[in-house]
Amino acid sequence: MLQTLTRRSVLLRMAAAALVASIGLLAGCDAAAPKPAFKAVDITGAEYARTLALSDGDGQRRTLADFKGKVVVVFFGYTQCPDVCPTTMAELAEVKRKLGPDGARVQGIFVSVDPDRDSAALLKAYVANFGPDIVGLRGSAEETRAAAKEFKVFYAKVPGKTETSYTVDHTAGSYVFDIQGRVRLFTRYGSGAQALADDLKILLAEKP
Figure 1 (cartoon, rainbow, N blue to C red):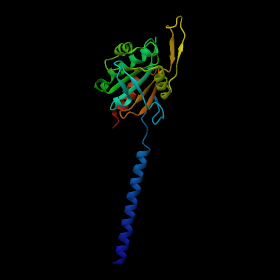
Figure 2 (cartoon, rainbow, N blue to C red):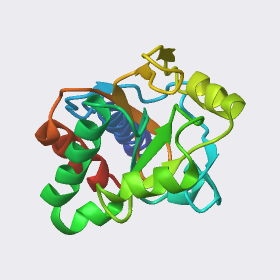
Figure 3 (cartoon, helix red, strand yellow):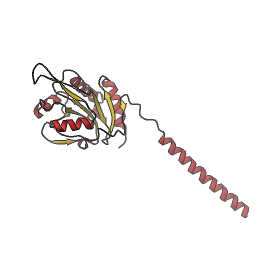
Figure 4 (cartoon, one colour):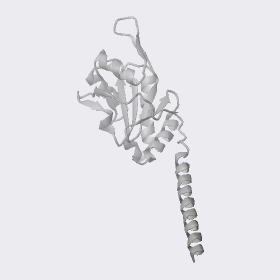
């Protein structure tokens, strides 16, 4: 009888150990789950592009937290940009159309790097060309520098024929934030609307 109990105890311990081991293996499988196959540069966990606080076209202070629950695409540019800026914003508008109803869950933000010329009214009118829900943000020269530094965005005036006809060289890419407000991707200019749409679908499908 004692031998039977002892053998049963051993078997129960072995079964418990096997169960613990199997749970460990399952946890290991979860930990090793493949990362999403993004087409843009995956910068998940980056210690930059974490904060943004500037005014919109109505003078209201806006932050990234205002858009939590949506996938947010942030682009730095200026309204008199001849090519990169309008192309990028037009592609974002196309992406929102491609996504159908889910397009309403994508928030575009255009941050001006030319506060001297981009007044609140001008910026508001400019972004409206690409959709009624696109938000344009601007700040003082100091606030613009701080925002650009936080996002590792380069910009510099290039003199023109007159004092006010300058252009602005700037980083040509967008930052993408997930629905929890975490920066996830950097998408380079020229990647195309379909590539961005595919990446946004992945982020929109993630659980909160």
